[in-house]
Image (cartoon, rainbow over all chains, first blue to last red; front, top):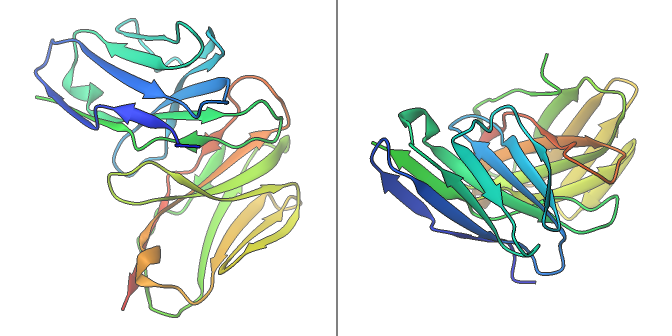
Length: 114
Length: 113
């Protein structure tokens, strides 16, 4: 169990640019979540995958956001035409198949849009 | 009303003190309750995971759930400077699909040596 891995740890980009983040979940976990966290707030749900299927998306996930999990393993989160309001920590979490399995988080990607 | 409410603090205590962190929730369907610890610029780390009402103890940490009052607590005994972090409570309903994890805003704790 190497934990949830996210890359990059920090991304600085100019407004209007596209960015892509990667998440590698714990290997045996079939469920993967993306959250966004801003300063002083708890994680806010963005989207959820079970294997390769994206089963749920939050209203927070505007059309500029897209997430994929093509082979049911790693996942990517892309933000197009970034805005300053997109600056936040983007957290990935995974969990196993049991009904009582908790979320395990990675250390996040901190996005700064200038 | 948010699903999970948490006093953001900040909370400052001397080393060795007993710390009490609290959350309330609104959804009576919530069955699972979690506490996460988050250090600055890190992801949340799972501390405690409990089901339904009652207490769960792990070393210096005790999680307590009172479903009748929809109140969840985390107690830290003999607090250490290394406990200085933000503590997030979370809850979920008893279902095996979808997103049912709801987080509080976190309580910032500082333990002073």
